[in-house]
Figure 1: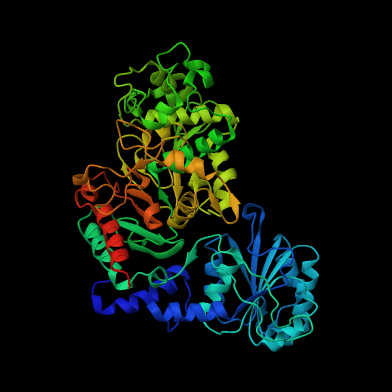
Figure 2: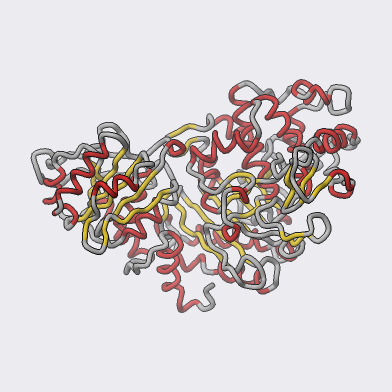
Length: 605
């Protein structure tokens, strides 16, 4: 963490290199100098052989990508930027004696359907590399990122794979070309001279920006210095033990301009927080999973907001929940109580330390629940609970627990499977999903509470919320885990009113409907929380516009979109580690950091 302002420019440089690209090189570009170099790179980057419109890459959930380099010096930064969009596996095409045997390299990459090959002038001296390119292009997608002198294009005369050609030898060029492959930046130029019969002056292909760009604040008209107070506020929260660590991301105008990790996973300071770390989203699950599925089903016409719970759940028909409309659930105006008892009702016969056909629901390590507990006990408790405030706003986890059941009844697909297949994977969200302990190493997942009452263990990869835990980690109210970049992708898609990466996930009117104020008795949208019109609350920020929507999470999460400022703001923390504390809210950490962002926007460059 930065302690003193004099070192801020060093911070900006290292933050971009290490945070955005994880690159070991130190480019001599910061602030406006970076923007200037980026503009020069844009003017000297050309796309060739793109008649099949492979670039920008689409259909990310269907791609398995290998990135191959030979002598390119900025390969680490290039690959790191690729990884912002889709999981890639790097391969070194060199060994201690020179170029590897193409047959061996071909064998190593046989399970990948897309190859991104980084080339330099020196690489093209070896004709085996061109042979390797052409041989693979017969069977799979091949994309070439060529950095060098245009005269070397003649050696690619017989190559039909797309070529992104850049003649400026700088780290910024590496970042730019990597982003261009996925549509993070647009390619706007044609060749300015003829280099071969095929690669002639004024030829090339133009693309448009379709995904997030990763750059410096100055690219979005913000002075980096004016964001420096984010460090101070994050430091204060950690020193005050409001949270062991946190991650902050800011995207403005479709550009990630700030993404930094602070502190550690726990107060023993063993593992530093990283921007790639995976956090428990808590109630942000409500909008990042359950609500977006509900939006899709509503748009398709398979779910009607004015239909009732009983129309979708026969078990509800003889209860006082039968005639509650879906719209009421989404607005938290159904009259439901906030929650039901959870672990307090467990009997010894309900749980086991070992899994079996009977005890099939994994709650945490060495803690298994009998398989029908949710249906037999929890769902009955929900249906038998009183309705006390129908028509008034009372925030209830039960609303989204029921929405999960309704959505699954409509789709015949579990919530976690549906959102993974329809949103997270196609969008290129690499960590987002439920049950992360099945997919990721524990040191990638931020631990939450040391639960000494219910599960008697440190919750690391297991959902913190007790209701979701007893549902096996998949609920409509909690259970989602993700990192900051994944959330930025999802909420940029919503800020774009349903489009991202050249694909349409929602119609604009669907996004507008769910994110707009829908209630006469609260600030809420459908599923989404919104800007609070009561000025003294400064929620989610004293400077946020009335269009702002998003949600917070009990574990110390905040995700907000402000369409007026074309802004996505993400704050991730584990403020419940090792025990639940209200210090983060007491310090107003999340809104104060958001205030800094608005102040910086207002000050400009």
